Image (cartoon, rainbow over all chains, first blue to last red; front, side):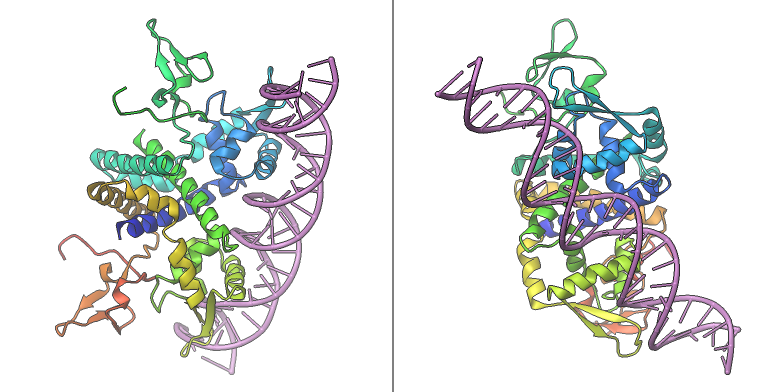
Length: 192
Length: 192
DNA sequence: ATATATAGTATCGACTCGATACAATATAAA
DNA sequence: TTTATATTGTATCGAGTCGATACTATATAT
């Protein structure tokens, strides 16, 4: 019974988010999906800013994503740069115009209004609940987590205070570890 | 800062729901939106099963909804019945085929899997957090709540144990009060 | 009786989305 | 090295979503 209640609430909440995103994006002629991709690209690290990463994040096909990206590029909200090592892949950067757009739209007015009236404690509890549910969904269904680098099992802090990714075998900047990574995997809480 | 965290989590959760709904609906050739409308219609009362109510619920335009409903009707998942009093309005009923489809798809497998591993206490906390957030969004942005009849301020229990809606001025069946109503308004918690 | 509001449908154009086909590059195997 | 296979990305088609507009029919207010 609780599963149904949770599902229904998530469904309703998603609907409210969509209404909110549609409203926010409409000012700039952006669809909810376009706004979401722009938002994702503004938050992800250098391993996760490719069309394929966006494809995995949205759970769509690469063809679909390719088209949406073309729209964002036409609107001068993102730019495309070829990878130096792998000539197949492209890196997508949010332009100054795109960043400015995001700053004025996300989080949307509706969510700002709603969170304002909640106490600090309520906000923390809500965020924890959302986090538990998302983690559960990802774990039990073997999905990619798309979490921030610092919470990843591959991330290790070296003795000199810098960070290192054990998957891509590369050092990480301090600014990187707060960004979303497509290779992110949740830490094992069990004792090693 | 918490507002951003909550917004990002809701965005991610919505994406997971969409992936889940797409997967569940694909078996029957249904789009996520079509599945959601079908789900809504299976849960709403006799005042809320019209195209306009669905329009308000989804926050779309009536033209858009009209098209989607046509698809569901073509697939024999819903039927349309003219209102006896108001000849402009139509009532939408989920067919047996539609009900059976919903039973096997909602809640989606992904959510069932995720909720299974959560404790009863965790489920309650998550549901409470979601409810608080949804209520906050609705209140602060003056949106329609689409809650269940029994939690509505217009619902009153008569001395003989039956229920009555003070808005539409009609008695309510015991089965009705657990259904979604488009006229739903949250109760005033303040002393009158 | 007339004006206005409401419920719903029809149609257009922009966009999403999955499927398929294709080109270019990278990697593995022979 | 050559060949096969995998991966990244683009192009194109058809079905469907979505908002905007125009329209019909009915209901309600004046």
